[in-house]
View 1 (cartoon, rainbow, N blue to C red):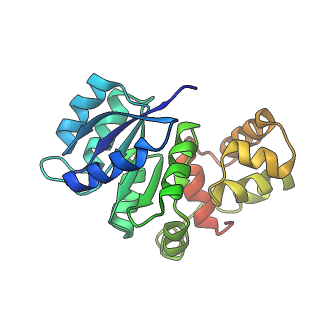
View 2 (cartoon, rainbow, N blue to C red; view 1 turned 90 degrees about the horizontal axis):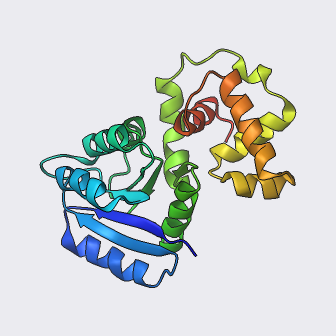
Length: 214
């Protein structure tokens, strides 16, 4: 079994120690490096080539948002998953805008973190349900100038797929729920993004939140 290679980035040693203990019990995960700030994270990504970077948002020297942006520019295939104590919209949207593929609060249960890692490793976006639900109303207010009636262009099946994307399901989980092949779900996702003029999975997730389809 191919292990998911993780890089831990947090300025608190006690947090990194707790994560090390957690992942020791996960045979499908391997910690390949650690960093205590964004600058160290950049060097560690180049050296360790992880699959996923678990990134705190607020750190000294270089914060998680800037580090995420630079990592995605230099290593676009490396996914970044925010794992942070900050649950307000400022950090949430800043991390997504920087290129993070997911956002998990540190109070989340271990199985929720593992679910996030698995989802992101498959190329999907993971937004912790508490954050998605708490922030959707504010996001609607700040994004009132949306894309008109673009939703009308979607087929009934594409709307179903969009709802499940907004609820945080991976392509594989969507395929199982709708009794479709993963390739068919991929095709529906591509059609949705083309019709709505969206270019990334994060944009697609945020659009679904904006329209309140979740």
